[in-house]
Length: 475
Image (cartoon, rainbow, N blue to C red; front, side, top):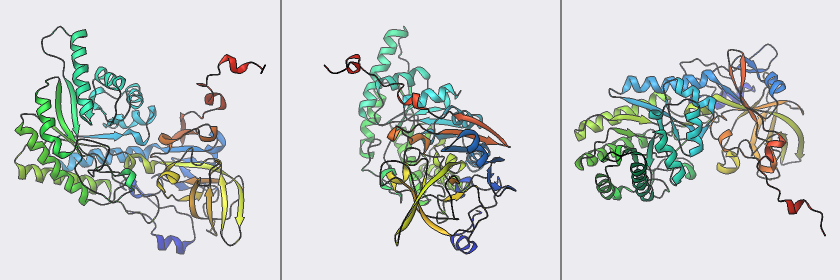
């Protein structure tokens, strides 16, 4: 792991910029792997000057580094091949950032895509992701979403009893309408279960403990397995569990492997040929210098060794091993560039500096109390002299991007870059205060390509409806 530790950073008085290589684990770095400083003292990413990108594409601007994303994909893929003697598949948990370009990139690296809605599924299909590499999640899938999934041929990760019954009904409809054969067409499913494993992360993103809206409880296993063997239209090929997100500890994931193999053995007792175990994702990333997550390689090694050892203890064959990283694939690959605006000093309390975005392009600070690091991209070598609060432009007192940031002296028009914004920034962006959502570009070897157009005011009213009676003057 290569990054400037907090003490060294404080002593240096300079803005953060580590030296990294493709061998580095992207999730352990604040900046994309290609970040550097050019001879204008400007931040570069992917060979592109960030200030020039803002001049060309405007701000706020998401800047995605293709090399960092591809490096993370390859590290996951290759680590599973190295540590696991059986078949494996890495799925990108696309709720982190689902768009055509991102789905196409991860698919080109041999990864599948995990989706959680009809919209995410449709996007992945349009990006060319093959059906056998698509897995649909969700705790309240609509009939339309399930129908789309069945017609697409993707795997459905079943979350609850209502969904099981709905799928049986949909399979019967498909049989009546389309298939004269005596045997109903089967629907490929995984069962999601809550393993009862706690992990140290924000309570909103812990999903493995029993008090969760997701998945079947373990004490329902016998009833669920009995239901499945009575309905041949349900082809249960695997089991799924996910304990949470932004996790730094490895023990919880090691514990998960043992629990899941016990479930696999129970399925075999019911004659259900479970072939896949999906252990979810959850590996965290660096948002500040204080964060110290395991590397991708370390996480994969623990998972693989846990499954291999548990299968040996339980005397069951190795399943196809599936994982679902999201944040650790793309979080560190992207930064957000803002243009700085007004300043306000409250004597004896703090100084506020504002940017031209905020909670509409990054709702994580106001939602999860998330912390970030920032640099001034247009003056990278200047010493850190100011402790400021970076405020967004929205009409909310809580719209603070970073509560306490060390920056050089800044002026309106400077370009501020917030690091680690690839996960849950664009995907959770909104039009709050009727702000158009930002553009996104992908950079690689000095080339920048638009992957998301900036919204304009006309987009904001595109789906508004104004009844004719409201256009008439009052009587």
